Image 1 (tube, rainbow, N blue to C red):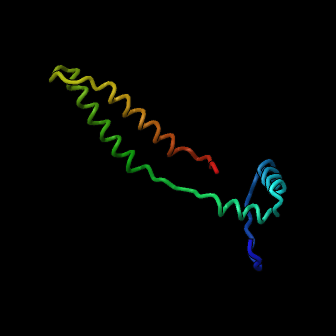
Image 2: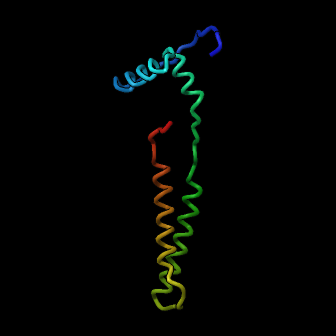
Length: 107
């Protein structure tokens, strides 16, 4: 890292085990704690993905599939078995829900 005057501080709250792990990793990498945290934070790219619009559209598609399935089951018309399509819709929906609820940060 370049030499510069560091006159700003940043305070964060950690558990004892989190603090110990960061200090240990800094020592293993032979960096000061400041250098380790700076290198780690600049090197790590964090992406924020808003899945809400996609979820809304998937719910609409699911609703349409359910309406089609009801009509088929009621005998209104005979057509392709949509059970596989509905299962895949559910799988996509569940995967997106899991992604949007995943609050654990992975470097």
